[in-house]
Amino acid sequence: MKSAVFASLLAVASAFAPASQKASSTALKAFEEELGAQPPLGFFDPLGLVASGDQETFDRLRYTEIKHGRICMLGVVGYLTQEAGVRLPGDIDLSGTSFASIPNGFAAFKAIPAGGLVQLLFFVGVLEACVMKDVTGENEFVGDFRNGAIDFGWDSFDEEEKLKKRGIELNQGRAAQMGLLALMVHEQLGVPLTP
Image 1 (cartoon, helix red, strand yellow):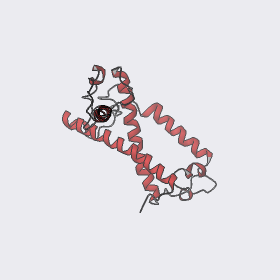
Image 2 (cartoon, one colour):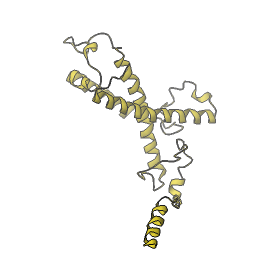
Image 3 (cartoon, rainbow, N blue to C red):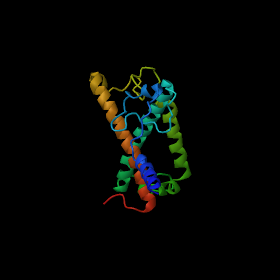
Image 4 (tube, rainbow, N blue to C red):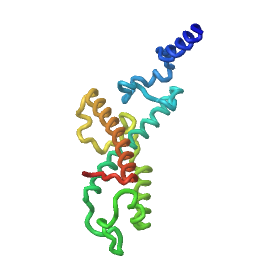
């Protein structure tokens, strides 16, 4: 009896013992020093999307992350601006529907006239197809859409400052993606977004 109790205690205790860490693959090590791999997680790829170590796949996913982060940063500002009551002056269509009469959030999709939704989708399509990409081949990094036309002082920064600013943008984009999701969930739950 004592040996059965001892064996079960030993089994329970071994469940809390630290597990041996298996070495990460060299494919994942290829991205551990990339921008955005920060403590405490380091390079975080729980779905193994870049487990093959393919740089082209990593660059495509990083491009998508940066693009969605930029969209969400604009989305959070727009969401909160509308919630604060700031609206465009005038009418959204020729029948006299004012911008101020369009509700916030998801309810806006039902209130915007069909022609307005088509215009929005067309505008987003043009941005996606023609503007939000490297047209000239002059990009310094994935997500650089200046295309030789816009600088805003970027070329005056040294390499360390550029890397810092890119990291800030990446982290702010990640936070904005979570923030926009939280705003949408709160709206659906009926929680007020402003005090």
